[in-house]
Image (cartoon, rainbow, N blue to C red; front, side, top):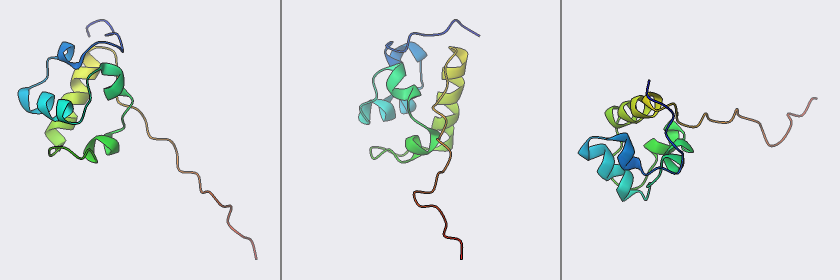
Length: 85
C-alpha cells in the first residue's frame, strides 16, 4: 500500500481511468476529500454520467491503495419511535 494521500489532493493523484476520471469531474468532484466523503450509494446516485460497478470498484481500489476509503453510511434511525399499543 502506498502512503496515505492528503485529503486535499486532486483526484488526478489517484490515476483513474479516463471514464472514471471524466465521470468524477462531470459531477464536480475534484479532491480526494470530496470523493472520500461520499458513500457507495451516493456515487451511484450522481446525476452526471452513468456510474457503474466497475467505476465504483476502481474508486474503492484506488482509495485503498492510498490509505483512504469511501464514507460508511450512517445506520438507519427511525425519526419516530414505534408506538406500543
